Amino acid sequence: MQQALTELHSGIRRLYGVLTEEPIQGSPAANELHGFTHKQLLGTARSAASVLIETAGEHLTLFVKAIRLPAEPLACCGSVRSLLESCAFASWMSDPSIDRTERVIRVLAYGKEGLSQQLGCARASAESQASISLLEERIRQLNTRASQLRTSTAKGSNLRCRKGQVKMPDATRAVATILDEEATYRILSAVVHGHSWAIQQLGFDAEAAPAGRPAGSSIFPVRMQKTLKVEVVAWLGLTAARALCRPVWYVFNYEGWNTVELQKIFEDSFDRLRAVESIRFWR
Image (tube, rainbow, N blue to C red; front, side, top):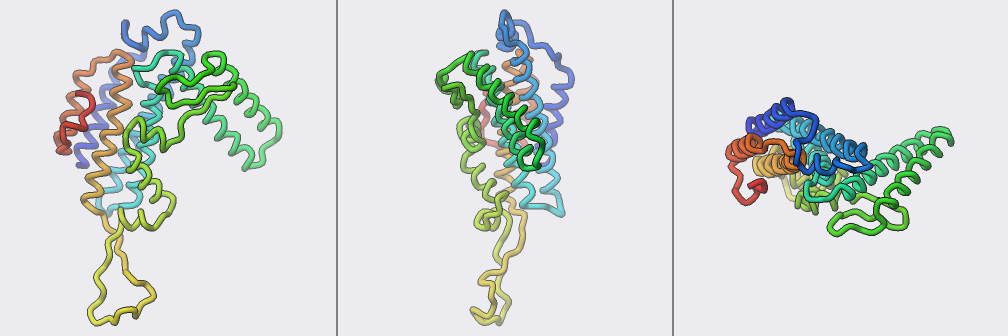
């Protein structure tokens, strides 16, 4: 598994390294740019998706490191959870099936969420009122710009845009609707948030009671041993690989890049992972 995931990541990076920054003529990306007044925002969407894919790749690398001995069975859960978020939002912005107005609305929502997080940090760190007011004004400007583009919810957009407000879906909803990994994301979130039921299920096994110890003689009803579970690693590794492939596939189709070699990289890696055909969505 480690080799398959590493080669998947390195293969994707190798292809990115030889591609032009400009979309191929006749591609969805090139067609959207033609005669559009918001070209810069389309460029921002492309850039944001690329950064998120790069981020997801690093989380995949961390997962591979975490399952090497001496393994870190709980750390690998956090890596895959973060990867799912990055891949979901990269796919959300790079989806080749949406139109350019929808794409611009989405990147504005993404930007607004980023500003909202900055605003929260500014207030928590007691920054000056001038700094806070500047962030609040930028958020108002984003809402105004979005409402000028569209004031009703687009069909299937997973994005609200009404009364001057624009909001991206939360991470759970994005992972559920785009990657179809809601259950996985929820249990990994439970690990990250410190819920013992999830931590024990994914990273611990019960130890056998010492011979001769009377029942009820310990304040701990069951002794637990941290364990790297093979079935958990296999499940998380395949989940991570499938999630990473989604936004990469979307970007290649959106930009009009040659998907033949990319598909070969996917197929080779998923063959090594012994993945069933039904999850190979690119076919």
